[in-house]
Image (cartoon, rainbow, N blue to C red):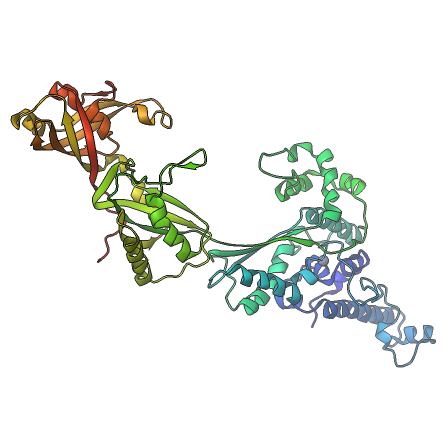
Length: 526
Ligand code: ZN
């Protein structure tokens, strides 16, 4: 049974005459049964005409007090007798909307979106694109972007219905089924069947289709003169005619004004919407771990100045490149709990880091496979070593940055002294507890950090005498303390500094990070 009622008659008639497709007609009749929309365009057309003509026949018959359909038969005696009575003399001829080649005219309302652009052949084309993009996925989100003029056409058609039906029983804009909603009803089962995975709003894999219809782009333009403040230019949008702006303008404009400016019925369009873009994207995945750095000539991140590479490699690249290959991504974001200078080693348990892999084509890996990758990284170089490599959530990465300032870090430094020293000359350093420093932003980072004075604490120090001009200094400090500046003083910008404490010139020859006390990511069995 076709889900239309007597009251829908006027709407069906008006919209078919206005060149709307059957699915748009059903939307405006507020038909909420998904399966109805999945019938083919042809079936829907036939059903709609049957509905119109059946009832016409009956009502006319009742009016004339005659058996159904007799009058029509008598009037149209030239017709071949084998023709069905019910298909004769319909108010809307069946040929309306049908082209000579048997195809359908492009719907004046949806511009083809609910015609061939939602049917099996089109969905197959989309799936072909998805297949060739080479993603692994277990579900997908399907999103469509429609040209904004469809909103204008929807509004115009709604005004027409309002006029035709008269006061009282016309549907409100909220009753009409949204084009996008109906589009989902039709395409989701087809996509699911074709790709063999469910369509799921929570999926991390998204397929998006962008439709455009250049021929009618001008539809929206009159709104800008009527409702100027709805269409303010914004920096990153190509056109001011965004869907949001058009919705806003349509809410403001008065019915009469709209009718005056936007002529109805709508001109038949030459063709359906075009597909501007079919895009696949997968949400980022995150990998975390800890790294040791054993080299004094390896920067943490690629060191490139004015397009020229200053150092051969970096921690980021040594870890990132194999990950890129495994997850099949083009780009990644590397972050870590603090950073060390190119000439500083990171020893002990290593420094926590996290890598965001953008738009990965592969995402499902067992921990065993991640462990094998870690092994591969470690076998590929002796400059770094990775441990605790694991998949983590985006939220978990927050733990790495949490309270970074309050954390303690341990260092060891090789110190040079200008004056000769004995073992006893350095022992006093071990008695200094929670020594407060005022550190002006170091000269060497002044080009990328604002000038400020920060107070940092050296919790404790230990010394190990080497020879008359050298000793090893072990420090436990608040995170963010500039160790090199504490040792050489940075032209008095750090006070006190080791030189002022020892009353001689001191310098730093080597620095190692011994531990970064951040208990994230979780330790794994090696
Ligand atoms: Zn339509």
